[in-house]
Length: 61
Image (cartoon, rainbow, N blue to C red):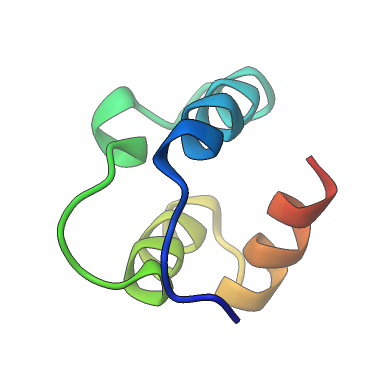
């Protein structure tokens, strides 16, 4: 897995995520310092899924 995140692409993905999961806040989806794995793990936890499940879903968006 690539550990870097493309912030432009992430902006597009986060908009799609907000449409599908309105319970996610802008703060939840704001990139913070840390690794991509930690960031995905935090969001996946908010959605009640594993990081791998979340990552797979992101790849399909």
